[in-house]
Length: 312
Image 1 (tube, rainbow, N blue to C red):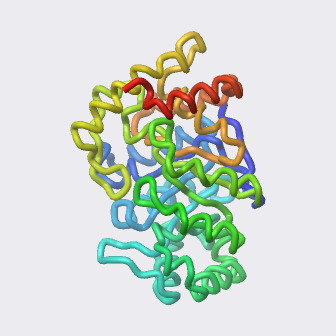
Image 2 (cartoon, rainbow, N blue to C red):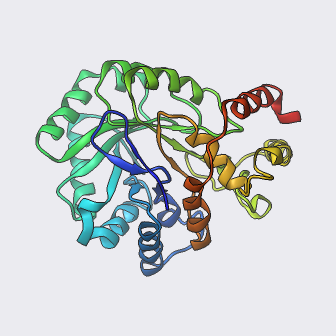
Image 3 (cartoon, rainbow, N blue to C red):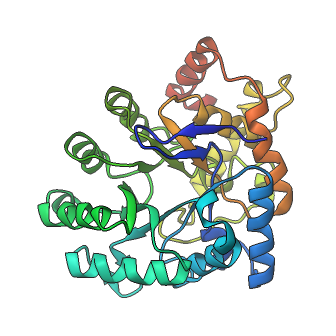
């Protein structure tokens, strides 16, 4: 059964393995009917997952509708984070756009509130815009959101924007891209997060598929975050993954589980969001909580091997 962690200094308790609903709504991980998608969400909940992350851009709002269909009768039992600022027509972080986007999200969720509303890949001017934060604070006061935060990206970016927001604003969470093969610049968030008790949510723990147990069969979706990797990157990353056997062989873990366990070794990480698009992944990923955390010696060796490119 999945363990639960506090999301930083918030009152939220989230499963340390969460579910990014983009896999069900975007069409890039296969085609799911509404019934198939809702069934997988129900099975995720039954496996102990209570944290679901989504965006209005996931299937043009379909991801939010799926969450509403799956959990309308138990809304208070799940934690839902969604986003504002980006749409198929462009980027708009203005206060009226934030409010309009949130109203659409709430309608699709069939809910009066969102647990965490995140700025979706904000740039430096957006993070510095006081009107943005005043709007989020007002929405919190109105009870339409419980907390607000930022989702940084696309890909492994947004370091300065993230650290500036962390120190200046009372964020519910920071969502960032980070994995054992792509640790920079993501790991630079953790010392600041530890200092201020900031909850971190990690995307791409499997490096877009390379660190999944059946990575050789994985195609790399060309969305805004896990972009199609070029042939040279894929070849190098798969060789690195082969050289990672020592971190899981003899421990009873798969490569996928070890990659997640590495992420969860960071105490400021509240939840990791692997790409879930098959039922068997639920059993594999939810079992991660049952394994012992990597020791400091093992983490030190992983850090050393990262600096050496994992032998590639």
